[in-house]
Length: 323
Image 1 (cartoon, helix red, strand yellow):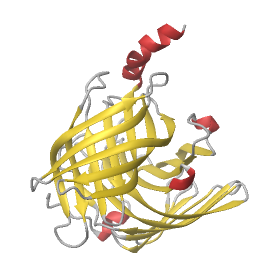
Image 2: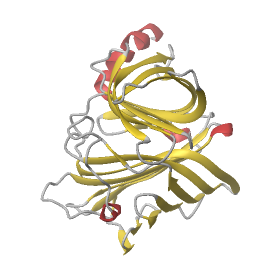
Image 3: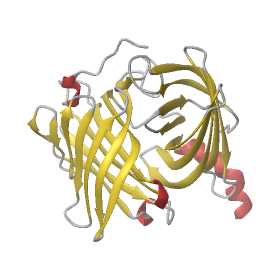
């Protein structure tokens, strides 16, 4: 494991550098698997400039385009967040984060003052896990991933939905740029007994098997439960008409030589466009089998990030055939 350790001060904004693109991010996800419903609460803060961006996105099986999702709200140029107390921030997007136990337990909220209100509690089932230093997609930023039990409520258009799931959060700080994106595969799954996360960096428009270059596996709890992934492959099945993924098979090997096979089927998805890239985010249902033959069912998701130019080249033959 890398020696990096998430400190209580990392729940707060860090001292900004003179880099215009210095960015802090807070991301929390939650799910209602039986409804095919997933959601993100996301905020990024350009600390040097003093601007906040982000919002909340909710998707289900009814739509994939952002303007058709059950809820989509994204701001780009808002004022800085307000620090209420150490570990407690209120963002102008409507999101709030309060550290109850630094690095492990958080109260997270969102209120758009109109249609949606979220009140959640995140309890980590593992400590925040650092991305290996220098590994893409954030080679120059500090980045931590963590799965946890998420409970609480979502109020949307007058309906109250109970939330009780295992989901992912991440926390990062460092420079982020809007140009120069390359492809990224960010895939995770989680339960109380098992979590894993894989990173891939596919090249060009190839959709063949991808090399897993980093990530982690957690088996059980306690010291030694989390091990880094040393390698493996990830193979995607894609929808012929739309190009998005419909299934994943991942072969994982951790730093202790232990192997696992994870097979996922898609449940629902949303498409998130950015300035020069898109992220096709898919909720997944997983079956994981370790080398002893034990099998675990769990939920998770995949973030399939493409530079828009590469996506266009990948889709060009299909689009031409449809014209």
